[in-house]
Length: 205
Image (cartoon, rainbow, N blue to C red; front, top):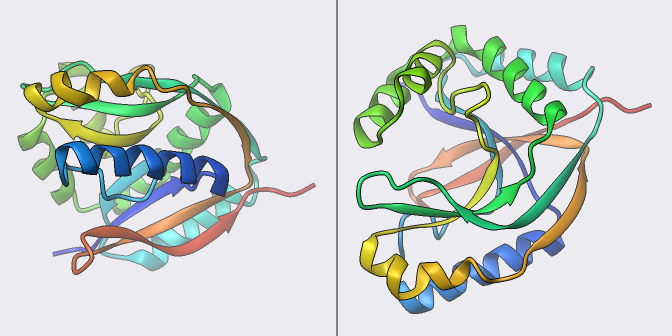
């Protein structure tokens, strides 16, 4: 079984601190919900890769030629319900440069994944036919107009969302920051969390 890796963006310390405070509020009210214990990040690609050397080569090549990107966080939002689950997340405003970077990475890494993670994910969640086709071609998350970059706070069931999750949406959250590097995370099964593995600086002047 190939190991799982995540390519993503770490938020600046001030934003990470604010997001962790929201996660702690969720834990106090609802307990350890899915994703509430994860470190804040924006996922660009998440798959199982049998050959990390090839992944490293592609990421180094892409990042060395891609300029820094400005990110705007504008409040909290939710994805449409997946069954009885509601996902609350920090909303990242649409950004053509970020979408281009995610597409470049997903396209370059698609031939290197083993597809196992995607099969597991598709069993657990519901997607449109267009999203399934894109995911099967590129891996998770799918690319294209349907992709919404975000930073997950937690997954709530119907009662948890009604009791507390809904109120989170009223919390103010406004941030701007410039992305100057991407992070490759490896999955740490003992800690049940993603751990930074390697940093890839974006193009400098």
